[in-house]
Length: 353
Image (cartoon, rainbow, N blue to C red):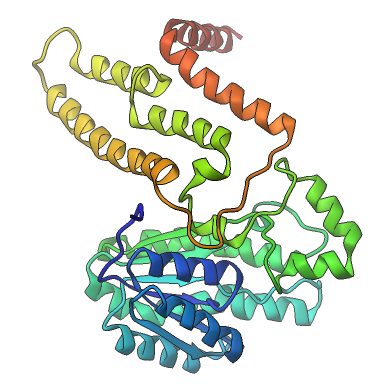
């Protein structure tokens, strides 16, 4: 059983033949969705399409040059016809413009930005009909900081993050949700970091050394948390504590935080204008708890997707940091007054200064 049910949902993934795009397409298909993918390379595209079809749902694939607006519009139309509609658009393709010259900027801008614009515009009429459609743009952590190695790539990924916010604000009235995902350094066959391992091992090792988990991420990890307990019981337990806290389950600090909010709203009685606000808060908390606990179910009771059961290794520093985080979630839930005193003292010192 999957954490998410996408049966009768129609999904389009651009750049879906390999790497992160392939993993996303497979995860959607595993969750029951009908999936269409596009890419430039026919061989990888057909192989991935066959994998998607293996999950027992509609699978569609077309070779498409995402720098060509006419081709993008035609592809989206063909995908919608093949799937019977459109509910989700995942803009995953990247031009990987690495050099700070005309070619580098053109490669990144035409794919990382304009392919998103083209595909989103072509998909909008169909997403509106879905009455609750979604656009997911794949950005990068490179878009959140300066880059001396790949200025065009970093700048255009920053633009993706900004454009995502603009899309979300513009399309909210149509009940279309728009979000961006910013993966870290992901290694997969034929991908950037596999190439760097061969042609620039010094950069590869330097980047690897900077990652607390002491390894690159995998494309499958972008798509799924299924069976996490089997890959790393410790990491799953820390996640369990955090999910319990977010769900407001005692004795975590999240439970106490929600309790304090309710007490503030209700005061000394169950009367007054804030009662309805408290009821709404409880309802939303219950809905949130349902989804957080589904994540727990996925981590502990679901089988990992085939080929994704990669053991998770972490450095001692990372284990200590996350373990302390998990312990604090419990301790501050059991002894919340200490946290309140710290916050009060900090506020008084700030105001007094």
